[in-house]
Amino acid sequence: MRAVLRSERARLTALYGTLLLLAGGGLVALVNVLLRKGLYSRISWAVTTVMPGGVPAEGTGDPVPGQKVFEPAQKLPPGTAPTPEQIEQWRVTRNLSTAAARAALHELTLVSLIALALFAVLSAWLAWWMAGRVLRPVAVITETARRLSGANLHERIALQAPPGELKRLADTFDGMLDRMEDLVGAQRRFAANAAHELRTPLAVQRAAAEIGLAGEPEPAKVARIRERLIAVADSSEHLVESLLLLAVSEEGLESARPVDLAALAEAELSAAEAAEADAAGLSVVRDLAPLTVSGDGTLLGHLVRNLLANAVRHNRAGGRLRVSTSADGLLTVSNTGPLIDPEEVPGLLEPFRRRAERRHTAGEGAGLGLSIVASIARAHAAHLQAEANPSPDGGLTIRVRFPAEPRA
Image (tube, rainbow, N blue to C red; front, side, top):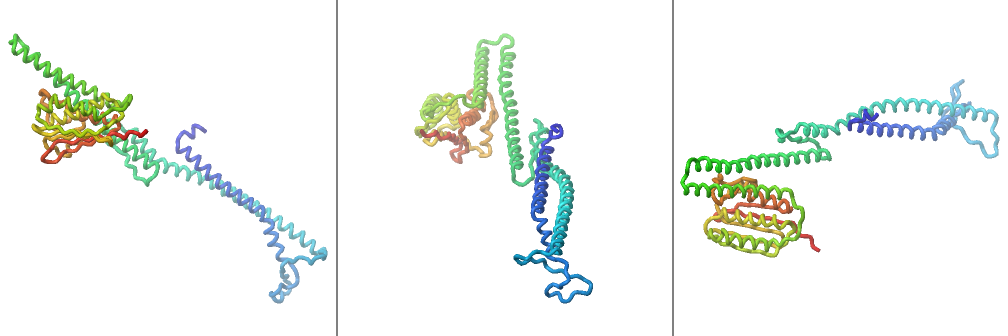
């Protein structure tokens, strides 16, 4: 039996068929019980309401000669004893009623059992058909999942069905495939870009060593090549550290504690002013309201530092840098700079995405700053929004809204 009921369709067929058969059997049993209680009395009443006699019934007129007419049975007056003819007539009526009731019940039982057998066969077929109809979307989902691979993640179920649990399941599966396709695509792009970014400095180092140091180069040339190799090594080290930081932030938070984000932003902003902002002639605007969030202080420091570094690096001479925090959990960093097409903004949050081709010059970023910011924001359940500033200011405005802290 277990071997037969290995499929969900067989189990549903057994369940539906059993329920329909029980319903039909219960209906037949109920009809028989009700008829057994009242069938004899109804037949007896029908038989005894007309009795053979020679007196015409009231309103029937004269009887046809030689033909007996029937009249309703009547109760005897109180104190009157029935005659032998009446007793015999009552006995005949009772026997006739009993025989008619038994025959009717026998015929009803036989017909009911035959009908129940036919109903059982029909119920099994209907249950099998219904189970197939119900499980058809599940079969479509299963076949799609079995067929999926890295090469055809673009396929979707797109179930055409009325709203219901299976429709929601299919739509949820399609949504999961959308996220998987985006994730796999992002991982492929990340791997390809990371390999390219790491291969380029290695090629530069190899060329400098093989070509620049070939033969007996002059000391000045050796010094220049040495500086070049050190710069390339520093760039590679920064890239590796950024990749590690991105990987760490993608893993989420191991622990969280209250962090004064306003004080953290003030410290990072002061360091940025001392290092780069003053040299670029930028005007810095602070609006740091008290803001405490729950998270990892080191990761949040990298988030603020990358935002400020991006705002300074992609600013213009004599431009403006604005940093603000608000008590409702919002951190905002805005800068002036080149005009950016709003359609390009979402791509800037992906790893190794730049508005211009990388030249591997001093001070050039690896294209991971904003993607690290986005990853750290996700780890802290924060919502990051980036939008291009309109002309004439240009640049970007990035807002990071942290979840509200529960009140004590």
